[in-house]
Length: 420
Image (tube, rainbow, N blue to C red; front, side, top):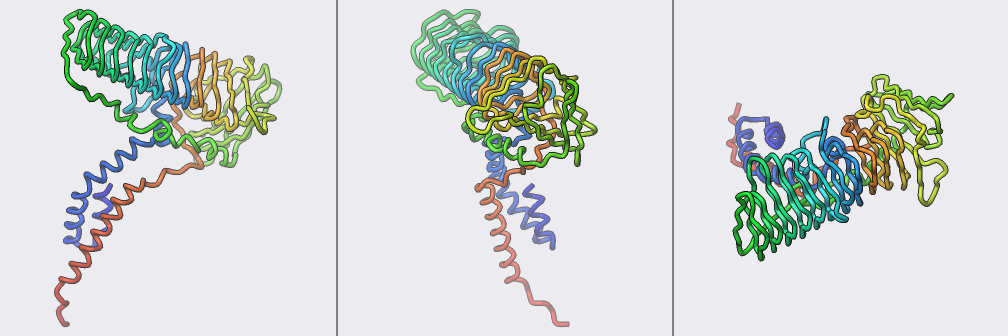
Protein backbone atom coordinates (compact mmCIF):
# COMPACT_ATOMS: atom_id res chain seq x y z
CA UNK A 1 0.00 0.00 0.00
CA UNK A 2 2.78 2.44 0.94
CA UNK A 3 4.79 1.52 -2.12
CA UNK A 4 1.85 2.27 -4.38
CA UNK A 5 1.05 5.52 -2.59
CA UNK A 6 4.52 6.95 -2.81
CA UNK A 7 5.38 5.84 -6.32
CA UNK A 8 2.13 7.35 -7.53
CA UNK A 9 2.65 10.52 -5.55
CA UNK A 10 6.03 11.20 -7.11
CA UNK A 11 5.28 9.84 -10.54
CA UNK A 12 6.38 13.09 -12.24
CA UNK A 13 9.91 11.86 -12.84
CA UNK A 14 12.09 8.78 -12.82
CA UNK A 15 14.53 10.24 -10.33
CA UNK A 16 11.82 11.11 -7.86
CA UNK A 17 10.35 7.63 -8.25
CA UNK A 18 13.67 6.14 -7.18
CA UNK A 19 13.80 8.42 -4.15
CA UNK A 20 10.26 7.49 -3.27
CA UNK A 21 11.13 3.81 -3.45
CA UNK A 22 14.02 4.31 -1.03
CA UNK A 23 11.81 6.21 1.41
CA UNK A 24 9.02 3.68 1.13
CA UNK A 25 11.44 0.82 1.72
CA UNK A 26 12.86 2.52 4.80
CA UNK A 27 9.47 3.04 6.43
CA UNK A 28 7.79 -0.17 5.24
CA UNK A 29 8.76 -2.27 8.28
CA UNK A 30 7.47 0.39 10.67
CA UNK A 31 4.32 0.92 8.63
CA UNK A 32 3.61 -2.80 8.47
CA UNK A 33 4.16 -3.12 12.20
CA UNK A 34 1.85 -0.21 12.92
CA UNK A 35 -0.94 -1.45 10.66
CA UNK A 36 -0.55 -5.01 11.96
CA UNK A 37 -0.89 -3.81 15.53
CA UNK A 38 -4.00 -1.81 14.65
CA UNK A 39 -5.60 -4.86 13.11
CA UNK A 40 -4.69 -7.07 16.08
CA UNK A 41 -6.02 -4.50 18.54
CA UNK A 42 -9.44 -3.90 16.97
CA UNK A 43 -11.41 -6.15 14.64
CA UNK A 44 -13.88 -4.77 12.12
CA UNK A 45 -17.54 -5.79 12.15
CA UNK A 46 -16.95 -7.91 9.06
CA UNK A 47 -14.06 -9.72 10.73
CA UNK A 48 -16.08 -10.32 13.90
CA UNK A 49 -19.13 -11.77 12.18
CA UNK A 50 -17.09 -13.86 9.76
CA UNK A 51 -14.74 -15.37 12.36
CA UNK A 52 -17.05 -16.10 15.31
CA UNK A 53 -20.18 -18.10 16.07
CA UNK A 54 -20.57 -16.43 19.48
CA UNK A 55 -19.21 -13.16 20.88
CA UNK A 56 -20.35 -12.74 24.48
CA UNK A 57 -19.09 -9.71 26.40
CA UNK A 58 -20.05 -11.13 29.82
CA UNK A 59 -20.47 -14.65 31.16
CA UNK A 60 -21.18 -17.73 29.06
CA UNK A 61 -22.85 -20.93 30.19
CA UNK A 62 -24.15 -23.70 27.97
CA UNK A 63 -24.72 -27.41 27.83
CA UNK A 64 -25.11 -27.50 24.02
CA UNK A 65 -22.79 -27.46 21.02
CA UNK A 66 -21.33 -24.34 19.47
CA UNK A 67 -20.37 -25.20 15.92
CA UNK A 68 -17.99 -22.32 15.30
CA UNK A 69 -15.43 -20.16 17.12
CA UNK A 70 -16.40 -18.60 20.47
CA UNK A 71 -15.06 -15.67 22.48
CA UNK A 72 -16.16 -14.87 26.03
CA UNK A 73 -15.37 -11.58 27.74
CA UNK A 74 -16.36 -12.87 31.21
CA UNK A 75 -16.34 -16.31 32.80
CA UNK A 76 -17.18 -19.73 31.39
CA UNK A 77 -19.44 -22.25 33.17
CA UNK A 78 -21.45 -25.31 32.25
CA UNK A 79 -20.06 -27.79 29.76
CA UNK A 80 -20.19 -27.80 25.97
CA UNK A 81 -18.53 -28.84 22.72
CA UNK A 82 -16.90 -26.16 20.56
CA UNK A 83 -15.94 -25.82 16.90
CA UNK A 84 -17.31 -29.16 15.76
CA UNK A 85 -18.60 -27.82 12.43
CA UNK A 86 -17.28 -24.32 11.68
CA UNK A 87 -18.89 -24.13 8.24
CA UNK A 88 -18.13 -20.91 6.38
CA UNK A 89 -16.02 -19.47 9.18
CA UNK A 90 -13.10 -17.27 8.12
CA UNK A 91 -9.54 -17.93 9.22
CA UNK A 92 -8.63 -16.33 12.54
CA UNK A 93 -5.74 -15.89 14.93
CA UNK A 94 -8.17 -16.69 17.78
CA UNK A 95 -8.51 -20.10 19.36
CA UNK A 96 -11.62 -22.27 18.95
CA UNK A 97 -12.57 -21.02 22.43
CA UNK A 98 -11.16 -17.85 24.00
CA UNK A 99 -12.13 -16.83 27.54
CA UNK A 100 -10.90 -13.49 28.87
CA UNK A 101 -12.09 -14.40 32.38
CA UNK A 102 -11.88 -17.82 34.05
CA UNK A 103 -13.46 -21.22 33.60
CA UNK A 104 -15.38 -21.76 36.83
CA UNK A 105 -17.84 -24.31 38.21
CA UNK A 106 -16.16 -27.37 36.74
CA UNK A 107 -17.89 -28.93 33.74
CA UNK A 108 -16.60 -30.79 30.72
CA UNK A 109 -15.51 -29.03 27.55
CA UNK A 110 -14.57 -30.60 24.24
CA UNK A 111 -12.64 -28.80 21.51
CA UNK A 112 -13.09 -30.75 18.30
CA UNK A 113 -10.71 -29.02 15.89
CA UNK A 114 -7.06 -28.25 16.51
CA UNK A 115 -7.28 -24.45 16.64
CA UNK A 116 -6.75 -24.44 20.38
CA UNK A 117 -8.06 -23.10 23.69
CA UNK A 118 -7.19 -19.88 25.51
CA UNK A 119 -8.28 -19.04 29.06
CA UNK A 120 -6.72 -15.85 30.37
CA UNK A 121 -7.73 -16.54 33.98
CA UNK A 122 -7.85 -19.80 35.91
CA UNK A 123 -9.37 -23.13 34.93
CA UNK A 124 -11.10 -25.85 36.94
CA UNK A 125 -12.99 -27.55 34.11
CA UNK A 126 -12.18 -30.89 32.50
CA UNK A 127 -10.96 -30.26 28.96
CA UNK A 128 -10.55 -32.65 26.03
CA UNK A 129 -8.71 -31.50 22.92
CA UNK A 130 -9.94 -34.00 20.34
CA UNK A 131 -7.31 -33.10 17.73
CA UNK A 132 -4.54 -31.69 19.86
CA UNK A 133 -3.63 -28.05 19.45
CA UNK A 134 -2.41 -25.23 21.68
CA UNK A 135 -3.75 -24.72 25.20
CA UNK A 136 -2.98 -21.59 27.23
CA UNK A 137 -4.14 -21.13 30.84
CA UNK A 138 -3.19 -17.73 32.25
CA UNK A 139 -3.58 -18.70 35.92
CA UNK A 140 -3.72 -21.80 38.09
CA UNK A 141 -5.16 -24.99 36.64
CA UNK A 142 -7.12 -27.58 38.61
CA UNK A 143 -8.94 -29.29 35.75
CA UNK A 144 -7.72 -32.39 33.94
CA UNK A 145 -6.61 -31.70 30.36
CA UNK A 146 -6.44 -34.47 27.77
CA UNK A 147 -5.18 -33.98 24.22
CA UNK A 148 -5.67 -36.63 21.53
CA UNK A 149 -4.64 -37.30 17.94
CA UNK A 150 -2.14 -34.58 17.31
CA UNK A 151 0.81 -32.50 18.50
CA UNK A 152 -0.06 -30.45 21.55
CA UNK A 153 1.36 -27.53 23.49
CA UNK A 154 0.01 -26.85 26.98
CA UNK A 155 1.14 -23.70 28.82
CA UNK A 156 -0.06 -23.03 32.38
CA UNK A 157 1.05 -19.71 33.84
CA UNK A 158 0.49 -20.80 37.44
CA UNK A 159 0.34 -23.93 39.57
CA UNK A 160 -1.03 -27.11 38.03
CA UNK A 161 -2.95 -29.45 40.34
CA UNK A 162 -4.51 -31.79 37.78
CA UNK A 163 -3.58 -34.64 35.47
CA UNK A 164 -2.29 -33.66 32.04
CA UNK A 165 -2.44 -36.31 29.31
CA UNK A 166 -1.04 -36.19 25.78
CA UNK A 167 -2.26 -39.09 23.66
CA UNK A 168 -1.84 -39.88 19.98
CA UNK A 169 0.88 -39.02 17.53
CA UNK A 170 3.00 -35.93 17.50
CA UNK A 171 3.92 -35.78 21.17
CA UNK A 172 3.99 -32.32 22.68
CA UNK A 173 5.20 -30.03 25.41
CA UNK A 174 3.82 -29.00 28.79
CA UNK A 175 5.05 -25.85 30.53
CA UNK A 176 4.03 -25.04 34.09
CA UNK A 177 5.14 -21.74 35.58
CA UNK A 178 4.76 -22.99 39.15
CA UNK A 179 4.22 -26.26 40.98
CA UNK A 180 3.06 -29.37 39.14
CA UNK A 181 1.28 -31.90 41.36
CA UNK A 182 -0.76 -33.95 38.88
CA UNK A 183 0.20 -37.00 36.84
CA UNK A 184 1.84 -36.29 33.50
CA UNK A 185 1.19 -38.78 30.71
CA UNK A 186 3.13 -38.32 27.51
CA UNK A 187 5.05 -35.25 26.41
CA UNK A 188 7.89 -33.24 27.90
CA UNK A 189 7.15 -31.26 31.07
CA UNK A 190 9.07 -28.13 32.01
CA UNK A 191 8.23 -26.55 35.39
CA UNK A 192 9.59 -23.91 37.77
CA UNK A 193 8.29 -24.96 41.20
CA UNK A 194 8.08 -28.35 42.85
CA UNK A 195 6.77 -31.53 41.26
CA UNK A 196 4.86 -34.56 42.46
CA UNK A 197 2.72 -37.11 40.68
CA UNK A 198 3.65 -39.84 38.25
CA UNK A 199 5.32 -39.65 34.87
CA UNK A 200 3.55 -42.05 32.51
CA UNK A 201 3.73 -43.06 28.85
CA UNK A 202 7.27 -41.88 28.29
CA UNK A 203 6.73 -38.45 29.83
CA UNK A 204 9.80 -36.50 30.93
CA UNK A 205 10.20 -33.66 33.43
CA UNK A 206 12.75 -30.85 33.58
CA UNK A 207 13.02 -28.21 36.28
CA UNK A 208 14.05 -24.70 35.24
CA UNK A 209 14.59 -21.50 37.16
CA UNK A 210 12.07 -19.42 35.24
CA UNK A 211 9.59 -19.51 32.37
CA UNK A 212 8.06 -16.69 30.35
CA UNK A 213 4.65 -17.75 29.10
CA UNK A 214 2.67 -15.32 26.97
CA UNK A 215 -0.94 -15.61 25.79
CA UNK A 216 -1.75 -15.77 22.06
CA UNK A 217 -1.16 -12.50 20.21
CA UNK A 218 -4.90 -12.26 19.46
CA UNK A 219 -5.57 -11.54 23.14
CA UNK A 220 -2.84 -8.97 23.70
CA UNK A 221 -5.53 -6.27 23.87
CA UNK A 222 -8.52 -6.39 26.26
CA UNK A 223 -11.87 -7.72 25.02
CA UNK A 224 -13.38 -4.22 24.97
CA UNK A 225 -10.59 -2.97 22.71
CA UNK A 226 -10.54 -5.87 20.29
CA UNK A 227 -14.33 -5.90 19.86
CA UNK A 228 -14.92 -2.15 20.17
CA UNK A 229 -16.66 -1.99 16.78
CA UNK A 230 -19.65 -3.73 18.37
CA UNK A 231 -20.14 -0.95 20.92
CA UNK A 232 -21.87 1.30 18.38
CA UNK A 233 -23.00 -1.14 15.71
CA UNK A 234 -26.55 -1.63 17.00
CA UNK A 235 -27.16 2.12 17.20
CA UNK A 236 -25.68 2.73 13.76
CA UNK A 237 -27.82 0.05 12.11
CA UNK A 238 -30.95 1.32 13.87
CA UNK A 239 -30.37 4.76 12.35
CA UNK A 240 -30.58 3.41 8.79
CA UNK A 241 -33.90 4.18 7.16
CA UNK A 242 -36.11 1.16 6.40
CA UNK A 243 -36.79 0.38 2.76
CA UNK A 244 -38.69 -2.90 3.21
CA UNK A 245 -41.85 -3.97 5.02
CA UNK A 246 -43.11 -6.85 7.13
CA UNK A 247 -46.75 -7.77 7.60
CA UNK A 248 -48.80 -10.28 9.57
CA UNK A 249 -52.01 -11.81 8.26
CA UNK A 250 -53.86 -14.99 9.18
CA UNK A 251 -50.95 -16.47 11.15
CA UNK A 252 -48.41 -15.70 8.41
CA UNK A 253 -45.64 -13.18 9.04
CA UNK A 254 -43.96 -12.16 5.80
CA UNK A 255 -40.82 -10.06 5.38
CA UNK A 256 -40.75 -8.72 1.82
CA UNK A 257 -37.31 -7.37 0.98
CA UNK A 258 -37.10 -4.44 -1.43
CA UNK A 259 -33.32 -4.12 -1.60
CA UNK A 260 -31.45 -1.04 -2.72
CA UNK A 261 -27.98 -1.96 -3.97
CA UNK A 262 -28.55 -5.38 -2.45
CA UNK A 263 -29.43 -4.08 1.04
CA UNK A 264 -32.88 -4.47 2.59
CA UNK A 265 -33.67 -2.82 5.93
CA UNK A 266 -36.72 -3.55 8.09
CA UNK A 267 -37.98 -1.71 11.17
CA UNK A 268 -40.32 -3.82 13.35
CA UNK A 269 -41.30 -4.37 16.97
CA UNK A 270 -41.78 -7.60 18.85
CA UNK A 271 -45.59 -7.32 18.77
CA UNK A 272 -45.31 -8.62 15.20
CA UNK A 273 -44.41 -12.10 16.47
CA UNK A 274 -47.78 -13.34 17.60
CA UNK A 275 -48.36 -16.92 18.73
CA UNK A 276 -49.13 -19.63 16.16
CA UNK A 277 -47.40 -17.74 13.36
CA UNK A 278 -45.13 -18.82 10.53
CA UNK A 279 -42.30 -16.50 9.49
CA UNK A 280 -41.22 -16.26 5.86
CA UNK A 281 -38.45 -14.03 4.51
CA UNK A 282 -38.57 -13.21 0.79
CA UNK A 283 -35.10 -11.96 -0.12
CA UNK A 284 -35.97 -10.81 -3.66
CA UNK A 285 -32.28 -10.63 -4.53
CA UNK A 286 -31.12 -9.01 -1.28
CA UNK A 287 -27.60 -9.92 -0.21
CA UNK A 288 -27.80 -8.01 3.09
CA UNK A 289 -30.90 -7.96 5.27
CA UNK A 290 -30.99 -5.87 8.46
CA UNK A 291 -34.01 -6.31 10.70
CA UNK A 292 -34.10 -3.65 13.45
CA UNK A 293 -36.29 -4.98 16.26
CA UNK A 294 -37.49 -2.97 19.26
CA UNK A 295 -39.19 -4.56 22.27
CA UNK A 296 -42.82 -3.52 22.10
CA UNK A 297 -44.11 -1.23 24.86
CA UNK A 298 -40.70 -0.82 26.50
CA UNK A 299 -39.58 2.77 27.06
CA UNK A 300 -37.34 2.58 30.12
CA UNK A 301 -36.13 -0.16 32.41
CA UNK A 302 -35.60 -3.84 31.52
CA UNK A 303 -36.88 -4.72 28.06
CA UNK A 304 -37.59 -8.46 27.97
CA UNK A 305 -38.89 -10.52 25.10
CA UNK A 306 -39.53 -14.24 24.69
CA UNK A 307 -40.19 -15.50 21.18
CA UNK A 308 -43.42 -17.54 21.38
CA UNK A 309 -42.65 -21.24 21.05
CA UNK A 310 -45.41 -21.55 18.45
CA UNK A 311 -43.63 -19.19 16.04
CA UNK A 312 -41.93 -21.18 13.31
CA UNK A 313 -39.41 -19.91 10.76
CA UNK A 314 -39.67 -21.29 7.23
CA UNK A 315 -36.28 -22.63 6.02
CA UNK A 316 -34.22 -20.69 8.57
CA UNK A 317 -30.86 -22.00 7.32
CA UNK A 318 -31.69 -20.95 3.75
CA UNK A 319 -31.23 -17.26 4.51
CA UNK A 320 -29.28 -17.42 7.78
CA UNK A 321 -26.05 -16.01 6.30
CA UNK A 322 -27.90 -13.07 4.73
CA UNK A 323 -29.98 -11.84 7.69
CA UNK A 324 -28.87 -9.87 10.76
CA UNK A 325 -31.45 -9.25 13.50
CA UNK A 326 -30.63 -6.14 15.52
CA UNK A 327 -32.44 -6.20 18.88
CA UNK A 328 -31.81 -2.58 19.71
CA UNK A 329 -33.22 -2.29 23.25
CA UNK A 330 -33.66 -5.86 24.47
CA UNK A 331 -32.08 -6.55 27.86
CA UNK A 332 -33.49 -10.09 28.19
CA UNK A 333 -34.05 -12.20 25.11
CA UNK A 334 -35.25 -15.82 24.91
CA UNK A 335 -35.54 -18.05 21.84
CA UNK A 336 -37.70 -21.15 22.11
CA UNK A 337 -37.71 -22.31 18.48
CA UNK A 338 -35.05 -22.52 15.77
CA UNK A 339 -34.14 -18.97 14.77
CA UNK A 340 -32.69 -18.06 11.38
CA UNK A 341 -30.03 -15.38 11.10
CA UNK A 342 -27.33 -13.71 13.19
CA UNK A 343 -28.44 -12.00 16.40
CA UNK A 344 -27.03 -8.65 17.50
CA UNK A 345 -28.23 -8.03 21.06
CA UNK A 346 -25.39 -6.16 22.81
CA UNK A 347 -27.50 -5.24 25.88
CA UNK A 348 -29.22 -8.57 26.36
CA UNK A 349 -28.93 -11.65 28.48
CA UNK A 350 -29.76 -14.26 25.84
CA UNK A 351 -31.21 -17.71 26.43
CA UNK A 352 -32.17 -20.37 23.94
CA UNK A 353 -33.60 -23.87 24.05
CA UNK A 354 -33.43 -24.41 20.27
CA UNK A 355 -30.76 -23.63 17.66
CA UNK A 356 -29.77 -20.14 16.59
CA UNK A 357 -28.53 -20.30 12.99
CA UNK A 358 -25.94 -17.54 12.86
CA UNK A 359 -23.52 -15.49 14.92
CA UNK A 360 -24.72 -14.47 18.37
CA UNK A 361 -23.53 -11.19 19.90
CA UNK A 362 -24.87 -10.65 23.43
CA UNK A 363 -24.10 -9.24 26.87
CA UNK A 364 -24.37 -12.71 28.41
CA UNK A 365 -25.51 -16.15 27.34
CA UNK A 366 -27.13 -19.12 29.04
CA UNK A 367 -28.32 -21.77 26.64
CA UNK A 368 -29.48 -25.33 26.20
CA UNK A 369 -29.86 -24.97 22.43
CA UNK A 370 -27.08 -25.20 19.88
CA UNK A 371 -25.42 -22.30 18.09
CA UNK A 372 -25.01 -23.15 14.41
CA UNK A 373 -22.27 -21.71 12.22
CA UNK A 374 -23.83 -19.52 9.52
CA UNK A 375 -21.59 -16.41 9.48
CA UNK A 376 -23.28 -13.22 8.29
CA UNK A 377 -21.96 -12.42 4.82
CA UNK A 378 -23.81 -9.15 4.23
CA UNK A 379 -22.74 -5.55 4.66
CA UNK A 380 -23.27 -3.14 7.54
CA UNK A 381 -25.12 -0.06 6.22
CA UNK A 382 -24.63 3.14 8.16
CA UNK A 383 -21.17 2.20 9.34
CA UNK A 384 -17.77 3.17 8.01
CA UNK A 385 -14.27 1.78 8.09
CA UNK A 386 -12.29 3.32 11.00
CA UNK A 387 -9.65 5.88 10.10
CA UNK A 388 -6.00 4.92 10.65
CA UNK A 389 -4.88 5.02 14.25
CA UNK A 390 -2.64 7.94 15.34
CA UNK A 391 0.51 5.86 15.00
CA UNK A 392 -0.38 5.02 11.41
CA UNK A 393 -1.06 8.68 10.65
CA UNK A 394 2.30 9.58 12.13
CA UNK A 395 4.05 7.19 9.76
CA UNK A 396 2.25 8.70 6.77
CA UNK A 397 2.97 12.23 7.96
CA UNK A 398 6.66 11.50 8.48
CA UNK A 399 6.95 9.99 5.02
CA UNK A 400 5.23 12.95 3.36
CA UNK A 401 7.48 15.36 5.22
CA UNK A 402 10.50 13.41 4.00
CA UNK A 403 9.30 13.59 0.43
CA UNK A 404 8.74 17.32 0.66
CA UNK A 405 12.28 17.82 1.98
CA UNK A 406 13.79 15.74 -0.81
CA UNK A 407 11.86 17.65 -3.45
CA UNK A 408 13.03 21.03 -2.06
CA UNK A 409 16.68 19.91 -2.01
CA UNK A 410 16.56 18.62 -5.54
CA UNK A 411 14.91 21.82 -6.72
CA UNK A 412 17.64 23.91 -5.06
CA UNK A 413 20.43 21.83 -6.68
CA UNK A 414 18.90 21.66 -10.12
CA UNK A 415 20.92 23.55 -12.80
CA UNK A 416 19.27 26.54 -14.41
CA UNK A 417 17.44 25.98 -17.63
CA UNK A 418 19.44 26.82 -20.74
CA UNK A 419 18.51 30.05 -22.45
CA UNK A 420 16.45 29.62 -25.59
